[in-house]
Image (cartoon, rainbow, N blue to C red; front, side):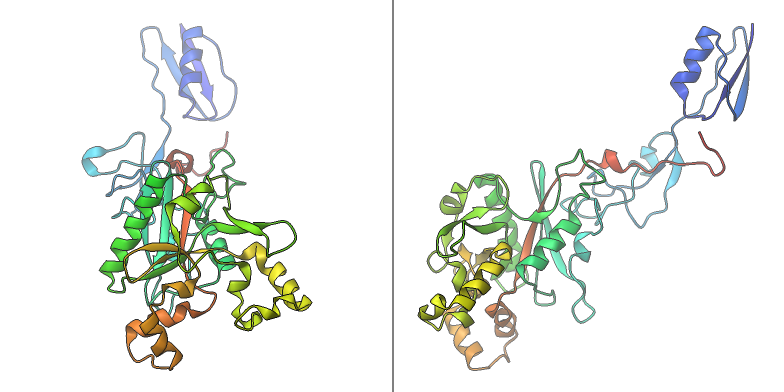
Length: 342
């Protein structure tokens, strides 16, 4: 028997094998094989680029030059077929699933890239930015930064990993993130932190009546049981001290009510690590110790510690992002030989 097989793509292994066994003829363009009785069918493979994965998180080194192979080459360290790892030396920082890696969440400050840290808990990934050399921002901008790190939902519709300001699905998950933030705060010498998280004010029409809830379907009970309030439960008006006249007597002014209501969709609570080492929920300025606040109000910012905390006086802070774990298998980089089409 003499059989001529014609295929449009060497990658069609199963199709070619089936054709050889059945003695059928595949019509098309490309290469051909001359197979005689007793001969074995030689066929191609699915060629992919393979990259090193130093931290074994399933994401390849984005700075490495990939090599086209049929299978991983473990001996040479070419084990994964994507080059999207945002930090191949840290398994808590995984792959670029959308526009940005964590280092791109904020523009550099004085030519210094933002400092960030990651944490992985079950099927969720967290990243928080911190430090005196990292920009702080308002809550709406922080939310946008987190989305740029999450999955592009329109491209990966099957993955529920859209980035957002962090919410917490359980007490152990919350504890894991608090530990990561506390460790970093102690390491960088500040020991204090304020970062926006995904807790919004949920109300009907009147901003004076409502409740703080997670921005997703996480159990809102954790807001009350997992953390204390920093300085009593905050109200939306507390975010606008310039409208409050100190004792709240100006809240009845219609223009002020309208301003507060317009800002409500973008309001988010701040996760605060205080000087005592305790975490609480409140406003960015709740992170500032009373004695430091005296220096700030006196305009004495000569101490770098005081200058750093002075940034928390307004409506800006650092922030904590969350996304579901993206699957590296959805980012495989296949080799396409130039000039071939199927």
